[in-house]
Image 1: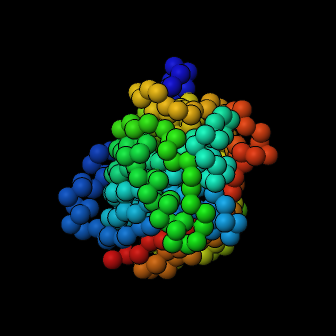
Image 2 (image 1 turned 90 degrees about the vertical axis):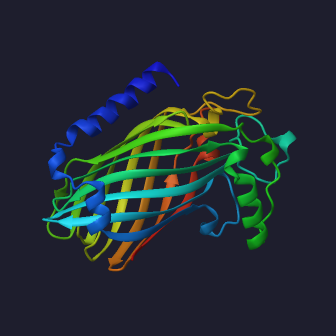
Image 3 (image 1 turned 135 degrees about the horizontal axis):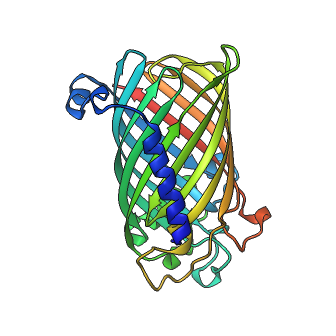
Length: 310
């Protein structure tokens, strides 16, 4: 983790926090949120096999399940929540044996984590979110067990190279997100810029994105909506332990250097009517490995989000 990348992400996190001009008295305390708020269960799934290509590679799967408690008052939604998740990363071909895996291909890596967050969304389209995840990288994350059993269940080729995954390391990641403004173009189209950053010994990066939405638009999560969206993002990478191995671990059998600037695009649709909210999209993520050709390292995967109000 370089000094310049750490400084960059710290500055962005400070900007995220400093731009949120909210007095402590304006935010309901956690006890009130729990007592008066409405609870919902959330499930997020990322997977490249959902594109029906029966192939895995790079960021191959991610699953996060959690609970969010919302308190709606005067055009504002305050929320607290928790989540647990697992992400899996593999080389471009999971049929390769451990002896065949090496730079510049992606190493095997699993990230198992849990965390809490707090967020606020306003009816004018501005919002912010701050959270912290704690977890472990490496064999302790259970990536080999999950992918092997999932592939056996769906009849796909079993992964062969998990014996060469990155070493164990416990990790902490602080993350933040800020949408400071919303530009409206009539009643059915808007454009929302977003700043985001992560800082920790697993991921350190900072980025900016812009999302174009069209359709029936509502900004608060508990209001009906149905719209399509297109998102474009640029992210500066300071450290990525799934590529470089743990920041504090040693003896990693296979690591690579990350690209310092990565692009990402997403296109999808959202349908929301209480008690359900569903989002489905396709994400195209740019090559994340410096020495790997872009034609090989670029990847596509499906992203699904479900929420159900209890």
